[in-house]
Amino acid sequence: MPELLFPLDSSKKFEDQEKVGHNRWHPEIPPVASVKPGTSFRVDCREWFDGAIVNDDSAEDILNAPLLTVHKLSGPFAVEGVQPGDLLVVDILDVGPIPMEDSGPLAGQGWGYTGIFSRNNGGGFLTDQFPDAYKAIWDFTGQTATSRHIPHVSFTGLIHPGLMGTAPSAKLLAKWNKREGDLIATDPHRVPPLALPPEAEHAVLGSLAAEDFDRVAHEAARTAPPRENGGNQDIKNLSKGTRIFYPVFVDGANLSLGDLHFSQGDGEITFCGAIEMGGFIDLHVDVIKGGMETYGVSENAIFMPGNVEPQFSQWLAFSGTSVTLDGEQRYLDSHLSYQRACLHAIDYLAKFGYSPEQAYLLLGAAPIEGRLSGVVDIPNSCSTVYIPTSIFDFDVQPSADGPFQITPGIGAPRAANQ
Image (cartoon, helix red, strand yellow):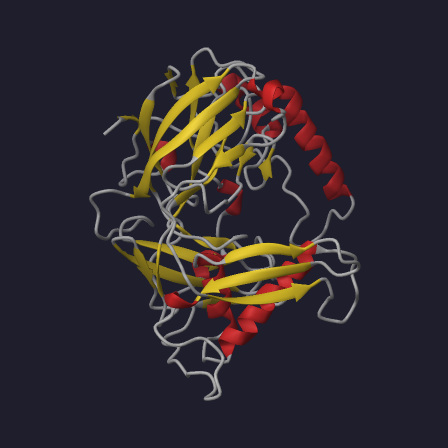
């Protein structure tokens, strides 16, 4: 096993650990460790809410999820000799749930969760159709996930970090805050908000000196979106065996990561759509000197996916176009067309006895594939959602006999939007 550089004690809160990570992006957050290029190491990761979501049959914890506190990230890790303009090469050697645990109070100890956030506390991809909070608990048996809240389904997890990235420079951080602030100003009272501004009260900034804390906390960017540094990309294919090339903006690169997922569908459409968990990840780091200019990688990460994803031979696919539910035509709106494809899949699964909320949670957690199938045929963009048929224990294909009727079980716990 590689050397464990960031240990987490499951009996302690994130801020009470021997080494404290962070939940904001800022170039002045001190590294927790320094490694040489060519080094392999292990990192423990806490699930993004640090234990606020529990294994029960209520959605009150999702309704009141403490979004101002996320993400609880492990790091930063400085890589010696790495400078702005380089490319940081990160190999994911291994990744998995919290080891040596069958069950316990933290997600990753034999279980994980998927949530639909309420409209007034985060929202989601389909928040207009699903304004209330819902939750599904998933049990892990080896690599397989099943849920008492979404019966008749099981699938192999494609475990991956939802969030990994390098630290921004002061210039890049100011750029983020300016452009996102300008967006917020176009509709400052929108629910859910257009973007998340810096928020100091709940900031966790590692071992930053007390005299700098207040200033940095008011400048530091929230971790919710993906940006030039990688960040919260939620790409399900960043799994074991993946190699990622991150642009470097500060000396040492200052790599941070977290938000591990047992499984996820493309788009993580419920916002808390993956199967969230804590666990471990083994990394190997190296550097390509001057790689940002050499390869034109200045504001994006590029990657080579791993080769451990589940293999499916049969899919049921649903298409959607850029026409609203009210019949309004939009011009090549791929976001809308993917929403419509997801809604068509949800409507279809409901014919078999699932509630719409169960189907929505399933699309966020299961290894569905989302594709932009047409982006040039004006005025309609076409997006598609592919669901592997083998995840169901019944025949989900259309037939002359009509849809098989499942027993929906206890259903997905609900808490009304407030």
